[in-house]
Image (cartoon, rainbow, N blue to C red; front, top):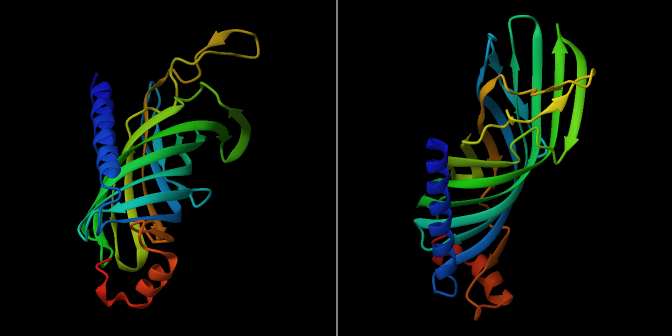
Amino acid sequence: MMKNSTLKILLLFVTITFYNLSSGFGQDQKRFYSSTSLEMIFSFADIAVDSSNASNIMRWAPVLNIQYIYNFDMNKNLGFFVGFDMRNLGFIWKDDKGQRWKHRVYTVGVPLGIKLGNLKSGMFFYAGGQIEYAFNYKEKYFLNGSKEDKNVYWFTDRVNIFQASVLAGINFPYGFNIKFKYYFTDLLNTGYEAFDENGVKYKPYEAFSSSNIFYFSLSINMFHRDYEYFHSSITNETIKADRSNKKNRWY
């Protein structure tokens, strides 16, 4: 029930943000530009496994995490963003019997959010939400440090393929960025049914009462102006001239 309410709030936020983005186009003194960056992820999970002394291990994912962001700055203190990204997402856990598991998905998603602060200096806070689609899942099993099993699945129901999350972060001058993200959706699908080697049906993930991922990440130039789009009356020549004379720019 709580997760359904959270999803409704997230969808409302997405709708409001999209409306603000759409209504602002074509107005003077607003800036629309795109930015591209990579993301280095340090992830954990809020896991609970029945009848198991489970402990979480930090997972480091430097690749492949690509973010493509469209930015719409209404003025020097307020902006919105929407984007598209691909992410390497997962968690690692172990028990007290020498067993360790790795769960990983690749997702594609659409983030939407708001930026508040000094957009001119690059020092600002941002927050938003995201919906992601998990298209590839991999799991590994280790016993006493030795890899015993590995399986890769495409477009599988072993995981909840739609992942809803909230995000918040701080962007610093010169492009350095730190972000925190929490997923309301469990990664593992506890209702998924499979067959063992004897043909007996079972649910491999029913012992998980929760498997919510959260992480912090580092990136450079997440909101950097790769390309800039101004009012339609401004040509490429005026953009070049404007870039050569930055003293009149608030951004």
